[in-house]
Image 1 (cartoon, helix red, strand yellow):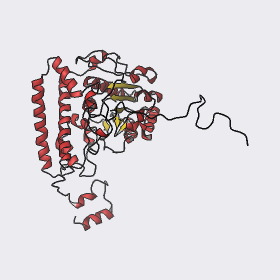
Image 2 (image 1 turned 45 degrees about the vertical axis):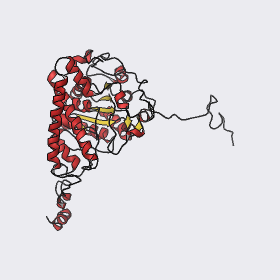
Image 3 (image 1 turned 60 degrees about the vertical axis):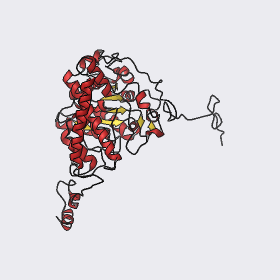
Length: 422
């Protein structure tokens, strides 16, 4: 038998012990928050690319960070000209305030035992609220479980949104889904899946069908940074690269996949947006806590897709301020005050500061608006809870088990339904 050549087992060719790399978060629970390693470029540096941007020309956009608001709350740079008007910004502020009030009230309800489970999107409100306002009827979002903000900005009725989390008579899907896994086709919100990554495959397929049937609609896929490690992410990317359907591929990089630091999914790559370039898909990386930047880039990406120029990829750089869910305790894996130290701030506070700096808003008006929004949300919540909670449930008729499954109910199910009373 021939002798094996090369270094001894367990040694590198340089004579050093072989070892693995383990990504570590910037700080552990017993350490102060530390974001010093983040490279945050100044606002207004990157230009607005043409709609027909090619992947080979998108390097700076995929590795940089598109920002509009500077540290003084001023809109600066080329993207500032693409920001929506004052009325749209005021609407965006209200959308985010409503979303945060809903989150706060439903979190409290879960802690009181009135519902089983809830997931907040605190700190990420700008992304869904600004993006949704750029869409048209007939477009379709393929969301994760943290995109309630898309529904808020689509003017989805709050009693239906809350009813779904309580799984009572106001739940449009009648308790058939985990709380926060909404389904609202008429509002462009595809049935949410708890298995992340599927959204990319589904959105690309839907966009292909839309192109083939000439409906004119576009799709928007949503996943978190952790789900980019899934096979579905790569399948969706490859298919989008091949067929060039009208789809916007969104990754929300909020630094944490449940309790796993984002470095476990990013690997040695500099950004998630840079991954898209290898598939020939142009990509942009955006400050997700800057409502103006989110609105401007969303408009760009949506117009590109609607113009038939193929897919675009957007990485929204943000921070998950709340726990992953009501079943999670983030104090076990990150510093308690890390959200407050996030260098890109809070999206509501930043938009509020911008509007105040321009004389369109004030601290007094903001406090009044907060109180009004909270009162509106609480009134809806009271009406919804009157229809049943976990503490005071109202059971659905058992015959409803047979509904919403088949377009035409098979004979054997009709017989079974008749046996239990209908």
